[in-house]
Length: 408
Image 1 (spheres, helix red, strand yellow):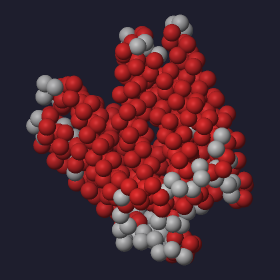
Image 2 (cartoon, helix red, strand yellow):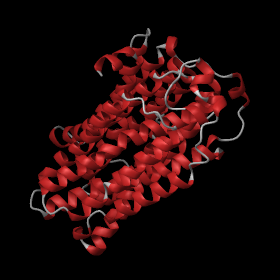
Image 3 (spheres, helix red, strand yellow):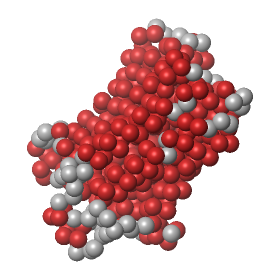
């Protein structure tokens, strides 16, 4: 299996852009929670901290696809440099405003500017697609990226909170900003692996979200993201109810580790069935594994149930991005990937809100009902969308490259 993954790094520049992309995407997990940690300590108000963080997250969810749309039209280096500069300036302004007690409105203004942060996972996946379009190695590369995303979420949040709590309030956002600046600069400077701008992309055209496959995948992953958001809030509440609140971070880490492990294995496999069907099966498993979460009665049971529940997450992402690569025109690929990534983020916000409301209204004993409902919505979307996700024979890897990739 390790040999299979090592193969994807053989082309010149592959290791470089993958490493730079990993550093540049750390702020995805660090920025929002870092803003909360910084402002809650500096102002002693969680309401203000949450509002500023929400303003950043929601604005970024709206801006990221538009930035990726420009990337498809003009190229990564021409758009990533100014977008990253604006985002870095926004984060610096937010930290300075927090340190010197600037008016509250400036916190929101700088948070909106910081929201120009581009979707680096989409940029990295676009480079992998440029290298391996139409070959079995692209699925392996997407599997590796899903594992990298999990590593980011495992380490990023803990790092942001730990730095802000142990050093000074701005330490978490400062580290996040440095990762964004350094990682993005290193990524942009690697011109050799930058995807070529497709001639049709320069003309613009309709937004990628208007494509039926992108709508289906995005909505399904909104629901999957809601399962994530529900897990984060409910685990914190349940571990506190079980008398071991400190175990929350370990339980959530196990959730991500379950996804990482299965993602590595799945990326090494070559299932011989349509990719749309693989997507539906992965979501069916994700939905089914939310049900045992309703019956956990202690921390060890919770940790085990979440580890199992995480098993279907990476296959869902791998197949979703594989479908984007097959069903979205090459000229709109980065925007398509970003919409799917955005769906996950929106779903996490919805899941956090919904589970918080359920816990406040009915108590932690209601556990993971929001997750079960979200899993049902995701499965229904995947099943009803099977026709829209069917890959035409003309776009199969066999017809484009002559290789018989088992996922047509």
